Image (tube, rainbow, N blue to C red):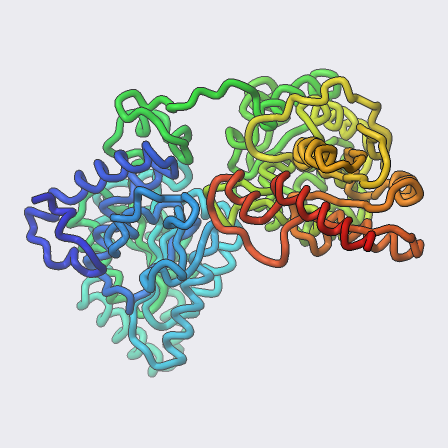
Length: 623
């Protein structure tokens, strides 16, 4: 019998023999390869965290103890060990399990995560609540070395230094951002410092000195002297200087060593960082050689590591990648930046061609926005390529540092709208609302791949803040013949008829064409307008529409509240326009995972639902 067959619920792992525990990591890696190769998902990070997760489950009792995963895309082994392995056939599929921790899925997932640098803050919250409520459970936050580039992690560490009860922070280091192991001295010092005798001795010395005249001064000087020696020998002095105990580094693929250091960490009365070194993609050679490629991947051939579906047409990210390099060739004021997503946002080519004008700030979107503002104020034109859901993390900086000063920063907002399998934390359905509310911000959306290129050229000459939002996936290549020049604030009339007019934003233009055909079949005449500018809205186009049509319909892949439809409604109301308005978008909710087509149908944003609702509403209005 396979060892994995013995694990059907939380804490079953504690029943395994030492020999079975030795066998378990290999079985889990085989399980992950078998399933992720079919469903897609985050592979490299999960392969690298297998032994670490096993050690945590041997130390903790679920669901009483609390384990918080930063980002959460490396939680697959945790899900396997908490009774969800039989659900992996539907990983990241509609009504299946999420690729991230979800409280609604299991009591063993104590905190929902999907964005980076959050786990220490959340874990500290659990630790404080535990102490105030008189409870005794353990709290462990796992954070990657890449996530430590995010400022929120340091705010939490600063706060955690005041804790006087146990709180374990596991630094899962894949050796990209944290310094290398300095050898046996650091491990030896860590073991000495964590022995019960050493902890008691340290406490006794401080208590004794505090009762003597000038004792506190002597204690402070001893601490400074000790720190200066440790600065030379211990790689974790960053944490020690913040008042947080540091243990490690330890080989995160050695189960016994990792379990031992975690158990030692439980003895600390305060916050403690356990530095665990792991290898992304461990156990699968293609992922070990190219971990970034296997960070988030679709279905693939396990034998070769190659995707099962070959990409035939360029996506919007590809278009952005090619065009921004052409613009930079003509304009040496153009600089580009990413928040640790050079590959995902299409800036790899820019980095190669213009290395001195490319900046990767790490997982620090707020810093990226203000960094861009500083460069813009100094005379450059920065382009910040960022996923829609991650730009949320820089909202204050957008307001205070870019738009308040009306600086020429271009935001290339990728993955806007529904993104599919990554679910609630990654859907880009809020950007039209939060960007449009900011004074001085211009917001645009292209109907197809050619228009994205035109918009990027337009923005390179635009000396104010501007955001272009475009979706994930294959770039629409229809309507090539419709290429009216981009004029600030003007929409584009594609078809002009009567009765009903569809104002479609970006990706919804393609849907609007199908809606128009369905309405034609039902005897309606229908115009289609490519919105282009979400902010400012084209008041002249809207005025023309209400003068010549009986119903205005807005279509957007964004929440309705604060979106384009709301802006149109406000304008029509202010003008007391005698026209019916029907808005299509996402109602007041977060959207779970599923394919984009499934989600559109579920949200009734597909062409069939929209056409039916327009027909019903038109009939009601005419009665």
